[in-house]
Image (cartoon, rainbow, N blue to C red; front, top):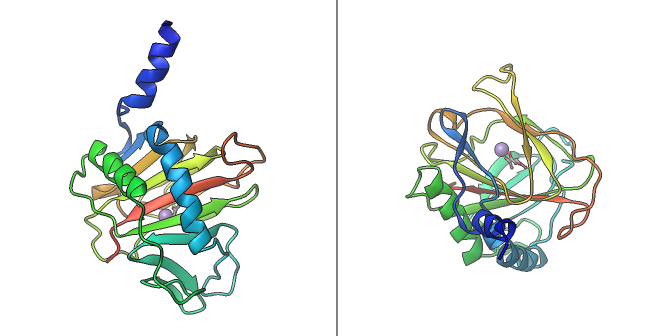
Amino acid sequence: MTADLFSDMAAQDATPQPQSLCPGAVLLRGLALPDQHDVLADLDRVMTDAPLRHMITSRGFRMSVAMTNCGQLGWVSDRRGYRYDSSDPLSGRPWPAMPESLLRLARRAATAAGHADFLPDACLINRYQPGARMGLHQDRDERDLGQPIVSVSLGLPAVFQFGGMLRSDKPLRVPLQHGDVVVWGGPARLNFHGVLALKDGVHELLGAQRINLTFRRAG
Ligand SMILES: O=C(O)CCC(=O)C(=O)O
Ligand SMILES: [Mn+2]
């Protein structure tokens, strides 16, 4: 067996060393890779039950990122504003349950980042096609801001912006690849963050898109 194969196996199996972005925020390179096939198969089922859709902001703008959810609660936006809801407004039915593979991944990432008791009840699924972006914002619709956010990147690479507590704080630019996970909580829980417009490309598993999974304890 070659040394290269050994190091590939190590990269797949070992928990990556957390890289600090700022106090409270870490990047876990490739942490999702060992789970990727189960996660992608389960995501297909979720997106069949609760299709991706472009939500509308309270000001009437259509978001460039298409979204859906799984878990007990789902994040929704419409003319009434942002909130969590236990049912999918498109079907009136509860959101699909959070698949075990997603829950396992979220908990493994949170534990690696020092949040061993994280139990998400919401997973927002964001689908970026080339050109789609997410402006700087805070995640602040969750009840307990003591719980972290776990954010998984799949598919095409993207540039994640991670700023400070003020919108005007200059954000870091963090290139994210398929399998990378960012976890933020504690002093970074309300930091502004966003994603620059996705560049054209084709990913070997996901094609011309990036999928982001954002796990939260919302209720
Ligand atoms: O796509 C990402 O990496 C970030 C998504 C995000 O910030 C959100 O859904 O609130
Ligand atoms: Mn966010």
